[in-house]
Image (cartoon, rainbow, N blue to C red; front, side):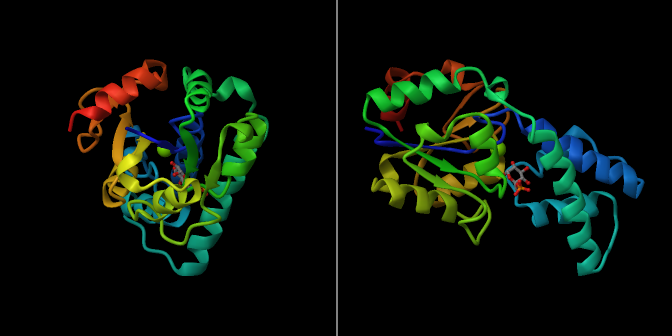
Length: 218
Ligand code: G6P
Ligand code: MG
């Protein structure tokens, strides 16, 4: 049975993926090229600098390292501006009740986020108390699809990877889960996240009973 749930943050527990998109789009606008929601799919779950590289590829721009750092900082300032006033209302439907149910059943809960802004978001949304372990962009050195973030999470809660399930809205995150030797559930539209074992549209569809049931069959 599943003994630990590892959650991505942006787009899984909180509705912040839209703010990342807004900030990247604003940067692309300023640089003078189109950046669509479809392009944005490639950025989900990916670290800040790696995201910038993809964005510049979309715009067909080559820049030196100093300019790249400046652009990443600019994007982050806008993003932090968007999220600094966020509160519990940005918690995605079903998240809180599922987190509470996991606790009642003694299932460990870990955060596995690439974001360096994760603590600010968790604090603003009052989500900190729900986690046994928090691993984010400040504690990892290798970004998803590298499995590091989830391996550290599983170590933190002392559960072996085969008893862990990862909830992710990004392809890079599903790949990270698989490479960590863990089970995976995608959060998204049917037909997307094709490498996830199961896809649900939101955590509203989850319960501990359903989790154990769908994770029993391979
Ligand atoms: C998450 C988001 C990405 C974001 C990354 C880094 O994985 O899905 O869109 O780029 O975190 O976030 P940060 O807040 O550190 O720029
Ligand atoms: Mg995400």
